[in-house]
Length: 456
Image (cartoon, rainbow, N blue to C red):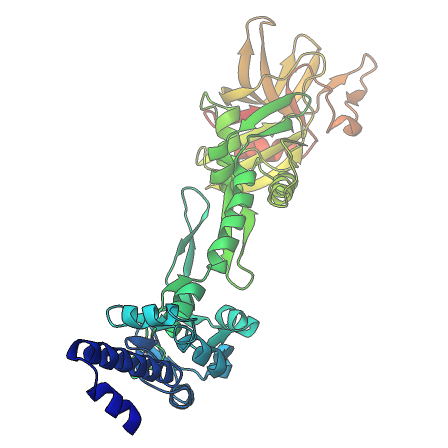
């Protein structure tokens, strides 16, 4: 060194300056090479932490320190803390150190270029967080329920469908958002991070939608009802609104399902409206048990996905009316071969009868026109006890009436009456015949003017 200084003194000023400059440059380069292998370049950040000028040991120590700080994660108005192992994250400090010193270890002069570039440009080092498959499982498993109340399910009375008032709120972390924030905020978990949330699919709404689809299949297409009306078949088309009107939908919250039942009165109203658009009095109890059962089976099968478009059934025994047509009246059902007496809105009594064989018994609304204890038929030459006429036929020039089974007196004076076995079967010329004893009760019950309703 002393020799080097002595040599420089004997050089000219110009040459001496060149030598000194070269010497300085070499020393600066040596210092830079030493520096670049020991500490990180300026503007180097690990997450939010500035690690510029730190050695590998210091960076490793910093990572270990930060690793002990539990990340705070905000969900709505709640804050949660998790360890890295709970999150399914492995902290790999070695990889981070390698990444931090990667610009330093580039070949000369690229490392020099990297250094000068670092003076003006911020560089983010990949955090030591390694997200494993367990992290994905963690995100899937964490469900945050911020519900204010349970979902409310009700039945819309008009559409007969289930309506959901969604009050529940369940959320999961958005995987990518959480991962990015954990990377970005590594080293600064003193304040919570706010990842995006993904709303969890509401299973109740999905199940209700499935139920409504099934209900739509119940009401979506008409049902043809073929009623055997005592010898004639009446075809009735029940439209969507008719099926809804006749059906009651109930919601079962325990199974998140709907059940169906038949509203007998509503079904009767629909059927009778379709059968008798003219307003002729019809039975309120037309929908008897077998009709209800058949219709119930159809809607139950439709609810199960079975496509049924028609039902054939026959109304069972019972009066056609319900006692509401008048304070007191007589009803005759030809198909059932029955007579019903109504008073005060209730059925008083019923009797088996015989109706027209030689000539059909007329149907419709009538009234008692006359009463006579013993009538006579010019057509059959029969005596008619407890006669009550209710209709006159111009065609026959004769009255139709209610009476006891006819009898006649033979030439030898013997009393001959119709067989009791004929009651319940068609056997008259159009009248309504009752068994002995029954006719007198009906005669006592009825007055001139009492309404008589006869159905086929």
